[in-house]
Amino acid sequence: MKLVTPNFSDIYEPNVEIGKFPDGDAHVRIPNLAEYSGQKVTVFSRLYKHQNTALIALLLILDSLREVGAEITVVAPYLPYARQDKQTIDGEIASARSICRLIADAGCTKFVTFDCHFLNSEGEFTYNNLLIQNISMSDLLIEHAKKLFNGEPFEVIGPDAGADYLVKGAGGKSLKKVRKNYDNNTIAYRHIESMDGDFDVSGKNVLLLDDMISTGSTMIKALEKLQEGGAKQLACATTHGLFLHDSLAKIKKFTNLVFSTDTIKNKQAEVSIKSKLAAFDGSEPTLF
Ligand code: R5P
Image (cartoon, rainbow, N blue to C red):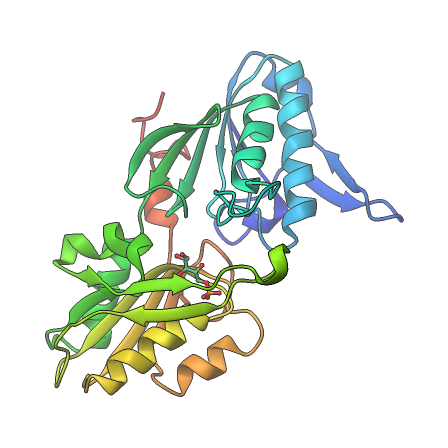
């Protein structure tokens, strides 16, 4: 059986109601909840934008389904908090671990997501008690780039080591990014200190590929580097297009070929996750 939250309406018909109480608390309703009793249920829910509210709504859904004895798979294309998977200074909370534990404890048997930041390959992993199936969109993003480059050859490069698994299928390599340390031993956004890599891109088309574009600082540094290296035509692609602040405008100073998937709804979403959901939405009897 399938449950779909309203923020997934671009792909499936929603059948869960999510509203807000006047004070901002999430207000959730699963019509005919009893019908899910003892069933295998797949919950399709985006957890961004408004990630805190969306996560609470998901926990409420999971807890209610668990109470009626459902076996629950969650399909959430983007996992918020995934970037903070390590503790850098004493007492800093590795929120990725905490969020995964909360989702598992609330009753999720399997969590399906795309290009999860702290996982370095496709496949199934147990992470702090949560069974995660990580699916990559790199193949479809690279296919899309082939059209944009009009069949001309191009190199695929990652802006940092985390992108290795996204680019290696296309014979690509990654730049080496180093972030600054925290100043004064307090937590804050860690800016990029350096980005290196000795690739000969002179006269070549290059697709930069990363798991997410958030503030855009990673992509912009990489674009600068490749432009300095004499690249011909640059493109940049990402699975999760957050495009915060004026990042898109800044990226467009280097290239108009900038696109993402629709794990997060945004104007640059040119590649759909839909075909990869078939294994989970009942249209292919391969799951369970
Ligand atoms: C970091 O390691 C990720 O893979 C991305 O490179 C990073 O999160 C992108 O963030 P931003 O756009 O803020 O540089």
